[in-house]
Image (tube, rainbow over all chains, first blue to last red; front, side, top):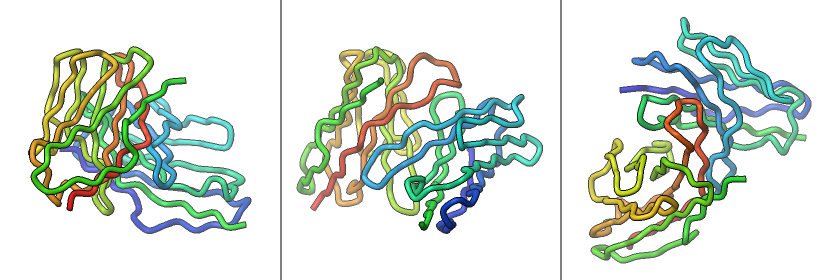
Length: 110
Length: 114
């Protein structure tokens, strides 16, 4: 079955810097990869979806890349703000439902 | 905006009790899902449904059942609650069967079984 790895250690960065989060996967060749944001005590919220034939996708300060050769997606937040502090989850569709990584917590300090 | 509503934010039940977790979505989505989320284990799929009265097992269905009598409502049932079912339960819905439809989550029910 699908295995998805995200860095379990929290990422601490200063406001204004670019945050880069990594999602690696094995045992599958997904057609799509999704990223979600989760705040404490809340359900995940969809951010971006990228298709296998798209190298890069942008939405405002967010950028996602998808390298099917490396089996890796990178999630970037440029000009980060304290309000970006949250846990970010990547997810792959195995054909029946989404399988999620365990998420990486991002902490942006002023 | 899609709204997925879970009936309880916090629930405390005793071991052996039958527990019902309710989820309602207001966007006529065909697909609905139940996940549980635990520290260090992430989100794990319990059951899902792609149509009324249809259900499929996820990765950890043991000890759970589901009911989908109406399109907008998907219930998770703990037949006999146990302490290892203490968790955050998240319901989600999705439009259609397309891979590129995002999930819309409720805000979760934090269940404690004592």
